Length: 257
Image (tube, rainbow, N blue to C red; front, side, top):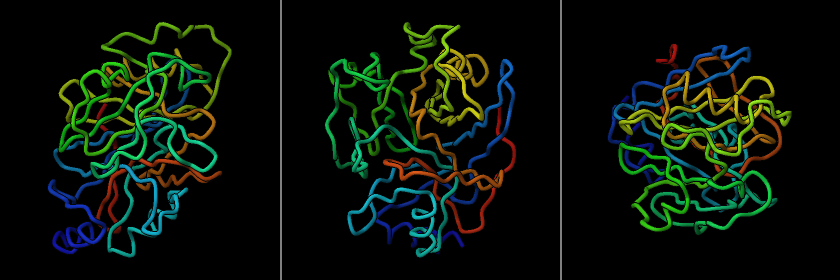
């Protein structure tokens, strides 16, 4: 099965090196009175990557379309979520790198909306380690990323919450984002299961999920693909997607806190 899986990934232009036999683990939790779902990806054991377009250059747009493309190669989509903001044509708003190829440059200027609420940041995946990096720091000394997506605002920056977040803010949405634990080996993806404000969501990453650096993805389009929980969110078409590739039929148990 492992050989078949590796050949399938090679056919998609991607080579698997870690053990593909285990899907990322997800769990539903309550934090400070609100329900959340989070998933932990161990980069030593799981393959994580970004996708935007199919072989014909069209945006995948949904988990089902991406899963179908992987199924044609004998693989499946594991844990996944939308991965950053995008224009109406689903092109990324900020930096986007896929398979080492930069599709969109980094944006460091302040601007409207959540993306422009500085500091914003970049999720960078290089080999079997990941980082969340503040955008201007990234631009000053760009690291080599196999995959990267820029979004904003940052949720947690070196253990501190974004300075613009207010505990009593009434701006509440279903939100999703991503963080990286201190060793760079574990990536944590989380989504709120009801509307919360930025301050609450950022504290989830810092205080409950033990994440020193975390990045917001979206609040208008927040989706999670977690087959182990029987959850495959649908809705309006998405732009970039981040997720794991697993052997067809793989599943996952509870996440590690």
